[in-house]
Amino acid sequence: MLSTLRFIFFTIVTLALIFGAVVITILNTYKPILRAYINDRFVGYFLNEQQFDEVYNDLVAEKQSIDPNVKVYLESEPTFETSYIRDSLLSEQNIYTNLRAEIKTEFTIYNVAVDGENKMTFSTEDDANKYAENLKSEVKDLNAEVKMEKVSKLGETTSIERADAILKDIVDRNKPIEIPKPVVEQPKVQKYNTSVYNGPIVPDLSGTRAWPTVSRYINCDYWGYYGHNGVDLKASVGTDVYAYMGGTVTHSGWDASGYGNCVKINHGNGVVTIYGHCSQLCVSAGEQVVAGQLIALSGNTGNTTGPHLHFEVRVNGVAINPWVYLNQI
Image 1 (cartoon, rainbow, N blue to C red):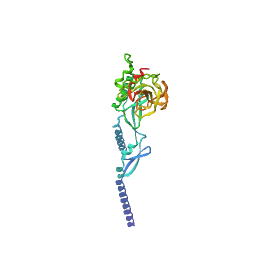
Image 2: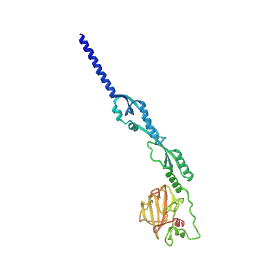
Image 3: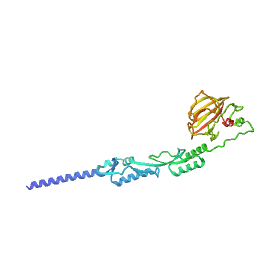
Image 4: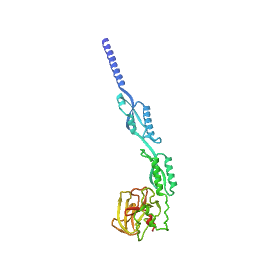
């Protein structure tokens, strides 16, 4: 009997030692951790909630280094489950990458819209207001406003140098330019010959003439900037465009050199008129037209920063000041 009890005692002790060894082995191999979830999506293993907060705060600082005004947030509060894992899983995971994928950002940008079209984009409201006010002070009838927009990614904003160039271009195109008065002391056809035309005299055209569009407001005059070979007449998209004189349409379509949709009319004696940036063309090449006939609708095609009609005159292929002939109307 005593031997039996002794056997049972030693057996229990042996099993206890084995169980203890197993428990110690497990505790040394597996560690208690927290499994983190966001919107039921597994994010990673964390030693505790404090470690989660530290990683999240590091990622917020990372985003704010790009834009201090960015809003950084998670779609929902994280949830945690207690678990046990091997040490190797802790070292193998990349909790920064996992959590970064769950972080949402919201940037605030400020667009400067001119007549409803966004022209500049800034990351600060002060810069946007400055350029909007400058535009309104330079051009009285211009509708310039600042529009705030929330975006998830911060795209390219307008640099100060680029904004200055855009402002200057808009002002140049919209500021009224005084139409030069004709000089009566000498023939008008001689006024511009020496600087713009190499022929002996600008060809004289006889016949009915018409102003190219209903508006006589000049956005940009002849050589208002380098290389500008015509005059820009103020005209919103869809305004009627008329033939200056009768002649033959030599071109009606797209011109890749910057005119966009345009019409070219040959009036004889080497004189050709060009009507550029049209939105719609109403005549075809080879068609005969008369002065004042509707040939197109004005627009904003080709190289342009706003709707208008570009009217140009060429004599034997050489651009001359359109006022040589416009002053004769």
